[in-house]
Image (cartoon, rainbow, N blue to C red; front, top):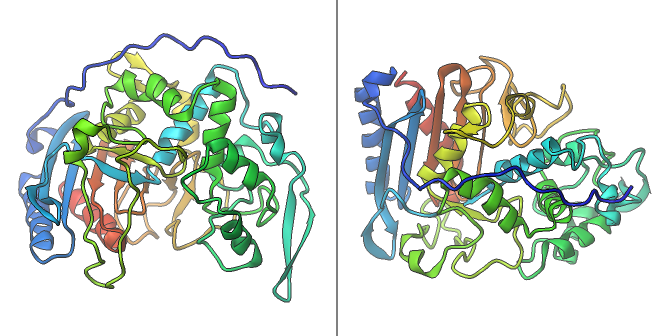
Length: 407
């Protein structure tokens, strides 16, 4: 089957980058004193040198009830963290690219059940790795990798840092992680490598969303960044979100400590001051707390931002439902009581997880420390932006605990 010809996108309008409406915490059912405790906690952690700085934003019922900045923008400069600081969001890129794929689905330009080799022929004859006594052999895949597999991370792809098998070493030798490559070149390299497991057999966090980025390019006929800008970012006024930071805004880029304050390891993050050659759909974007809150506002409101429809309500419901059905998953990445949808981890049980939340809430984060979640039952969204890779797990849970304590 050939790729469907490009069709004219639905008309969209660019909104001014005005902030979301604001409200006093008490007016939207949040405790001001509890949010003050959150502020004091983050201020204390900055003062003790745990993190260089942070921006936190909480909305309820569509209104911003908490939006504060803490610490310094850059540990090397005595500049207070501004509310509009720009952060490397890494894997918080994935939900944006997943929405891009669903836009194409809604336009009838692909189906979730489509084998990806219809659009990316390098994946036409997948082989699956078989490990025996430390050696790797391959066997035929029992079925093709589908678009749904990529969205829910059941494709059989992996990340090179997720293991030390001969296949993970092959990822490293193929340099699939390199930044000086195009999305097309990376997809070709991945298509030439075996899969870690049979498609659909289990959940494994992977470079699947990078491949989705290439899929968007092939079907739309546009570079990934251009498609995202025209179809998602500009319509929602997300003016500070993209794959690089323009020169006039370099002084707003948040930076990490040069070394982890607890482990002492060197910290090196993406250089986002130059245009990206590799527009990684899985982890290459930057954003601000307010920009990302606008995106979450759209999700919470069933695919509509203001008067601008981005996605249909049932599409959002599909994306934020569980698509694993009990498949094996990595417990260090998917907490107990959670499944995975089409771009998000999804909460399936009120208990089990070691942090509060509601059934039906969904979330994800980035390796440098950024995190978000959406709780439809409580009409709540929250974003925390930090650039502290070694502290990310602690602050994700701390932030969630203290925000829910404010309800």
